[in-house]
Image (tube, rainbow, N blue to C red; front, side, top):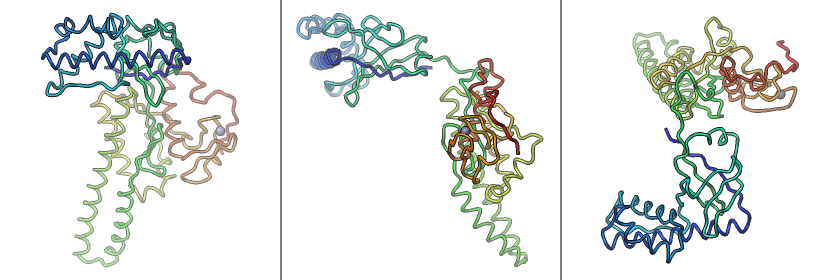
Amino acid sequence: MKQTLMIKLSPNPEQYKALLETMERFNEGCNYASGKAFETFTYGQFHLHHIVYNYLRADYKLSAQMAVRAIAQVSESYKIDRKVQHSFNSHSAMVYDQRILSWKGLDKVSILTLSGRQIIPTRIGAYQEARLDRKVRQSDLILRDGIFYLAVVVDAPEPTPDDPNGYLGVDLGIVNIAADSDGKTYSGNQVNGLRKRQTKLRGKLQAKGTKAAKRLLVKRSRKERRFATNINHTIAKSIVAKAKDTGRGIALEDLSGIRDRITVRHSQRRQHNSWAFRQLRTFIEYKAKLAGVVVKLVDPRNTSRTCPVCGCVDKRNRPSQARFSCVSCGFSSPADTVAATNISRRGLVNDPHFSPALVGVGQGKAVCFS
Ligand SMILES: [Zn+2]
């Protein structure tokens, strides 16, 4: 599996100028090589090299390896389409390999420019730092909105179910049908709207009590069920895909033996029946299994009352069904996102790389289970 890390460069003004000049010259060189390739029907890298290499070196002053990269880039582009001559924008990405780009530690990179090698500081984040020790395939110099970046392609190990890269926490049904710890909510507005109409209608039909009314009632509730099932399939699919794409497992609350969680939330139950919740869990679990994504069941106690910032556990942290607002530190956020975040962190608890500070336990904070 390949992964691209975008790393911002912080060149000084001279270095910026050198990078820009090099990029522009490189793309001029590509345009020249592209013209020759098209004119002479020479698209293969080897043959094109014989035609253009000396000119790229002498006329465009590209270094040997830059000339090789330019020829490779042009040749590559004609693999896709040979009907028209390809032209390169003066600020098109420039491909670097390890001969003309090398890392000096993690916060500096040495890049060959027309004005010689430049040691340029990078703005590297912890996420990128953790992944840069992997085998670097290729680095593209990119100019976007006046800022230079390196797009570094690295080999990312296939995540195995036993070794997930953290957990996507999923909370089922505070305000939305589901919410995940990345802040995304999966709403069932359509389902809830339909449900309300159905509940009304059901009341009417039941009051009537005729045979025809009963038949209609059965038909309606089947339709309602099918509809909710479709929504659950869609939500489960998108949650599992997200976890898989990011190499994470999925953390869910362990509800076995705990009934009060459901009854506490009886007000939502009317909108999204408990069978629908069970179904969504089942869908997530089996789709995850198919995709090789691990599902971890975590302790459900106080997931929606615990502050993810300071660790304070208090009933009063939930001024309303939808809102979380910490009485201790003031942190405020939608309640379902907070619950999903806590669930996500609890997923790490039994993992080998578990850090207590990360899950907000054992910090000696005031805890009141009132
Ligand atoms: Zn707090």
